Length: 243
Image 1 (cartoon, rainbow, N blue to C red):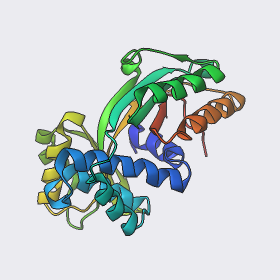
Image 2 (spheres, rainbow, N blue to C red):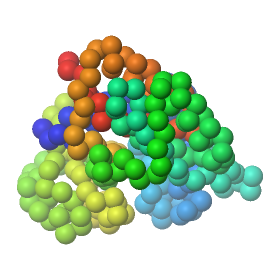
Image 3 (cartoon, one colour):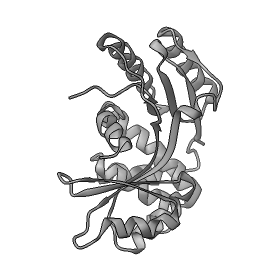
């Protein structure tokens, strides 16, 4: 399996935290997608992708439909994507993706956690060189499909030649250029693939070794950041713990 897959597999259990917070965070993503492309999934590829993720995270259908309905309301908050980055304890790089309707509140919350854990919040883009930004699609594996041929076909749509198969889930994960997200999704759907999840992620291009004690303090910092409803995902370049 590739480096990106191993990193995501080792860290995915910590990505969302408690289920209630998971649904709140996904609800915000739905609100942004509906505002940008409308409430009809068949006409809104971004919304379709988020709904696929919602289903994978076991978000009830009623919750999804309610989030879409609420997003159409006149009083719906105007969420914006903000990314904060800096160094946490022990020199570990940290990316914090947020969706917020109050940037002043959000940056204050994020900065307070960095300060509490003796970290240093930097300027936007200061740590971009430490991570690779990728579009990630997980699709249901189809019988009779040659993955090498599929990837060769998708290269014209910005997909990388690295892919990972998960026999337990009967799925395949592919990676591509974030700028090509919509066209990759469209090609997969038009060719009859069931998209199980579609998202953006940051993969560290070089991971940092830490001691068990250092890992514990960094995990606590990540968990504290994920407690905020505005925070969608926290990424670090800390080397995943071995099983």
